[in-house]
Length: 213
Image (cartoon, rainbow, N blue to C red; front, side, top):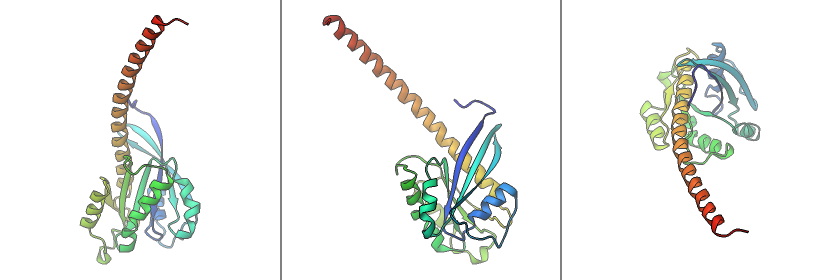
C-alpha cells in the first residue's frame, strides 16, 4: 500500500522525431518558458520538476532525447529504468505521427520491456496551436492508441502552454493506475507462493520423519 505524503522519483523519457517540440514541452513544463528558435537536442538532456497529485509529491526526472537517427546510440542507453514514456509527434507533421510505432518499438527493445507488459505510455500530439496546418486528426490519434493498447493521449501546445501541465499530470496518473494494478497482482501472487511453500514444508517434514539420516 502507498503511504500518504511521500515523495516518489519517476524517470520520464520523451521520444519522437526531431522538430516535434520535445525540448519545448520540457522547458515549458519545468520553467514555463518557450523559445521558438531553440536548437535540436544533441544526445540527451534532462531537467527535474516536482508536482503534487492527491497530496503526494512526485519528482519527475524528464529526459529529452535527440530525435535524429544519428544520435540513436547516444539516446538508447538512457531508456533503461524509465517509469514513463511520452511518445510525441506534431499534429502538422504526418510522418512524425507515422513514426510513433518505430519509437515505441525502439523504446521497448532498449528499455528491455516485454511487448505484453503493461507500461505507462502516453501519446502527445504537440503544436495544437497551428490547427490550420493539421495533418493528423484526433480520430487518427485515438485509433492508433486503441490499436496499440495505449489509454492515455492528449494534444498540447508548448508555444501557448495549452495542456502541457495536464500532459505530465496525466502521465503520472497513468503510472499510478498501473502501479496499483501491479500491487494487487503481486499480493495475489505472494499469497499463492506462501500457500505452496507451506505445503512444501509440510511434505519435507513428513519425508524427514520417515527416513532419518
